[in-house]
Amino acid sequence: MKKYKCKLCGQIFEVAEGTEPVCPICKATGDELELIEETPKSKYAGTQTEKNLEAAFAGESQASIHISHLLPKKKDMSRYRHFS
Ligand SMILES: [Zn+2]
Image 1 (spheres, protein in one colour):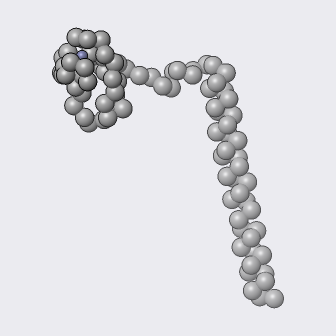
Image 2: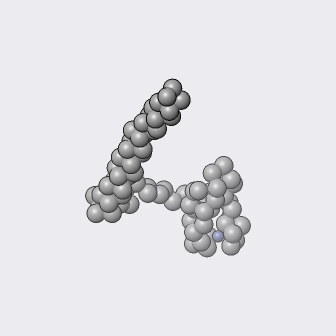
């Protein structure tokens, strides 16, 4: 999504990527619209929220590593049963 501000009426609206932006209020297009640069990454930069998010992601990846370690054990167990 890209965010635009209409220079004519001040309306702020979003359009999908690759879609021609048209003001929903006054139908302004092109140079009458100002692209608003959004930087979602810097929104939480250096804040406690970002650290919490990083901790959450780290915990998630640790969980999947833990699961992948368990999977070969299950395979070994079934192989053992097959031969016994
Ligand atoms: Zn407008």
